[in-house]
Length: 269
Image (cartoon, rainbow, N blue to C red; front, side, top):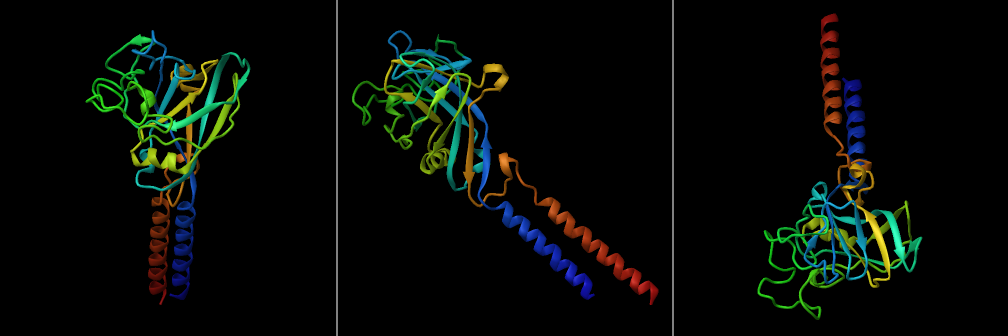
C-alpha cells in the first residue's frame, strides 16, 4: 500500500511539473490570414492588391497591412512578439538596403480582396476598408479623425485613429533576406484582444520602393510571420497546443497497475 501511495505521489508531481512548465512563457506562432497593399498614389487610391506576390512600402504611396490569426491566444496576456518580413526587392534612392520603416497596428477592420492594382469597392484600398465593413476608414458620416486632411487609411495607422505605434527601431532590409522586427507588448496585446486589426508597415519617404513578399508568393514560402511570447499559456514552442491528456492517461494507467498489483497480492494470501 505504501509503495502504491508513493507511486501516486511521484506521478502527481511529474504531472504538475509538466503543467507548470507548459504554462510558462512560450512562443506561439500565429499564421498570416490576409495581407495587401494600400496604394496612395493619385492614380491608384481606389485599387486593391490582395492577390499580389509583392507588396510595396513607399511612404504614403504604399502602406502594407498584414493580419494574423490570433485565436490561439484569446484571453491571454503577452510580452511582445517578433514580426518577420521577407524582402523581395528594393529600388530607388537606397538600392540594396533600407532602414527607415515604421510599424503600427491597423485600428479598423478591412477586407483583403483579390486584386492586382485593380479598382475595387468591395475590398480594402487606400480610400476604404471594403464595402461590407464601411464606406471609409473613418466614421461613415465623414467626420475627420485626429489627423488633418481627407479620410483615408492614414487615419487608422501610424498612431492615428486609435492605432498603436511601435517604438522606434532600426531594421535593415536586404534583398532575399528576412528581417525580424521586435513588437511592443501593447501593440501585440491589441491584436490578441481584437481591438486592432493587423500590422501596418510604412515609410515616411517615397524615395525608396521596398517590396515585401506576400502570403501569395511561392505558395506561402515567404509569408509574413508572427511569433508571440505569451504568458501562462498551455502551448509548446512554435504554437502547437500542449496536450495534458497524455499525463492524465499516464496517471490512469498507473492506477490500473496498482489495482492489478493489489488483486495479485490478495490472490496469493
